[in-house]
Image 1: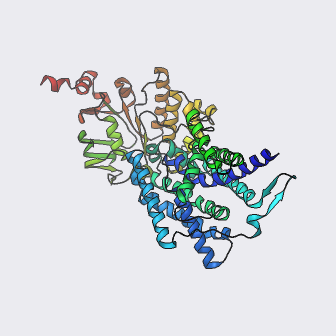
Image 2: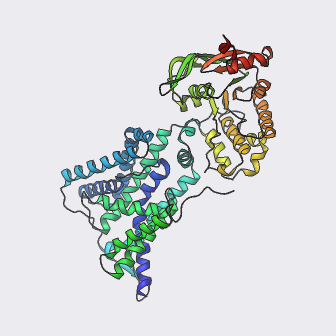
Image 3: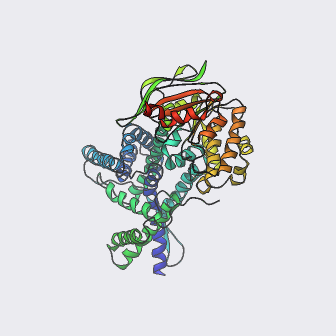
Length: 290
Length: 237
């Protein structure tokens, strides 16, 4: 019974990992770039939430009305103004440039906010739980982020499959040059994709701050989890990203059950095993058959 | 008044000059064939017209408007369309989505998704199939259909017959004849000279990045073409 509980907690934790990973997955799926600064953008969004909460004393979730569009604009501008110029030179330039962004964000935040750890308070919501059986209790907060993660990934999936901008994303991922022959400015398509990728960091940041505390240098740890979720799920597959997050979540809680502190180790071992035996990921997107 | 007028353009691949002072004009509603051996600059010419390859000197006028400094997507919105060499359909998109991509930023006109399916009936039952699983002939039909979906004033096709069975090529050119009969100006790049001569009103032959021969198809015999094609006369002289 304890193991059932552990797996359930793992699945829910996977939702949080999937939230961290969704923007990374989207940017990779469309532009084939790994945004090394993704974790730092989550933390940056966290500080935007923090400032908004301190200024207005509203619920952290409500600040997303401001933070999400702000991160979208930042993503659009960074892609159009900086990252676009790195796309022609192979895989290395985007890695180096996003690594540079990571350094800038971390040091900028240290300068502005000091290295103190920060978090959000949500009263009983963050600690309350609902008892399902005698042995299984599910926290409201994990349940919420799990539902939000599924909703977000379903929404992104619907955007990809059912809208003209999503069709443009998929076409641009297939063939950048030919998209231009369709009368479409591929730079705009990429900027929209990166804008949406960063817009997702706002939601991830609120849950990060409710779940644990963060500092200006918390980003790389979030990136690692996100990156592992994306790779386990299969690069470029949004559905895979959710499942990859869940696999990691279960690996974490089962590892913690064996011995405290083994959660992260067991996460990385699962990741290595997938890389070794199924390097394309467990749920990689294949060309749809007729 | 020419629909497309190219005035002494030169294009490069790196430091290699692929086109040298090329002059070409295309009148509205006619069909032009551009022929030449491998590496003569045919594809570079079409890519230069679309802005996919940078033109270093000269000017390109489309409907009397200079377009050399416009970006590719801006040229498409003016009514230029290219069916690229190697077809380049979007493999993960369905057949219908490929056509919608073509129509998305195109002009409005007679070509709709439905009329394209009428032109290429083989695509109709594959409507929901991923373009990546189609046969070569189906992909070429789709690439042409996608080009038409934008209702272009000038449709350019690069190596339609490449790698396809003769019967498939005949069907595709049959469809193309309907397109040109409907008033669309067409430029075809072909390695198959006889095919090119059969469909076109006028021919330009490229040799090592220069126009080596041009004129109405009816005036040109195959002997002169082969001289211009292989550069025999210049080799003798």
